Length: 517
Image (cartoon, rainbow, N blue to C red; front, side, top):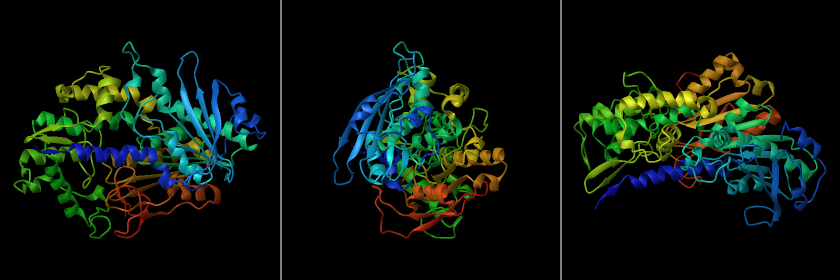
């Protein structure tokens, strides 16, 4: 029996969404907080860790406050667990705040999550080791990155309170509580506050800038899951194309298409032959060039090539109208176009978050069978998703002028070879921000976008990924040094610097869908 594909999906999950939750460990180094609510300002008398259980905050219970002894990697820290509710909803947003007992750098850091998961307390270890007081939240539900069934009540209806908690309220509540707890413990406000997150964490950071512009001074938003109401149903597009065509491609064929795209466009954008496409936006790869080529899992057919071209082009309506972007040429297919081959039969393996969004959040049917989907139904579901969820979790509001006026800075970077979140969606959002703010120069005064060629979702891939970009956010906020480039370093699958290749300079995006490497 021969199996392929499932291991590749697991690899995409580990390198993608799980990395999104752990990414602050690789990014953290840096900085103070501008804003705080009245409750935080009132609690400025330093106290012992244990005394924090008596802290009074609106709709908040301090469940525990204990000092955890130092470990080999983390200093002794005061660890606070709190919960926030929104009467009369009866929801429960759990919050963890860790604060170094000694060596506090005067800064607060909010840490983001991945997928449907808000974050986890373990992600606070790295920021605390770097001197930050840091906070995370489950955003009102218990579950992993792929578990989105909290959106349904026991009676099968949508639980809008939990959806809002997950979309934006949970992170804001964590920020308010985190600053108040920090002030009470140290006896003074954090000088600056920073956000650090990838994927859902990147979306959470931009949500803060859009909805609560006073919460953070600096935001590091990596591979942000913005445009949620559009890109999530678009993640199902590759599987729908294969299903409707009646042709699920084995992964070795997809690997051949990926390799061919990289070979054809290797020098595009950077002029270098390094197995990394410098600017996939200018790559004009046509999958039909491989028709007739032999692979270990069969000869590539015209049907195979048509499917790949449709996946790269992106989701389209049954009338052929644009719905959303596709995978950039040279990106892995195993995240969204994953398949499993067993006994010479290949079947689809859709990305779990896309299935949950359609089956539970749209159809409210946990038993929905994705194999019954049609192009016509997809049209309706895509429209429903945009209409029903854009205002709640879309996180695509380009009006960041309030954040700019508050003095905030945003650094966004996205891997061009992201196999889960379409990078052109991030570029399109940034262009819309430029339109609203008043142009490139006005936008770059507070928000900059960098595209990393050859980098997968959050981390990994053959291209160099930004090395310690949070420190550049801090330098921008505190010293006025706006980043012109990001230093890139090649890392292995575990996030460790690799000796393979050399470091690179990643330049910020200025031109529509054309980014230098």
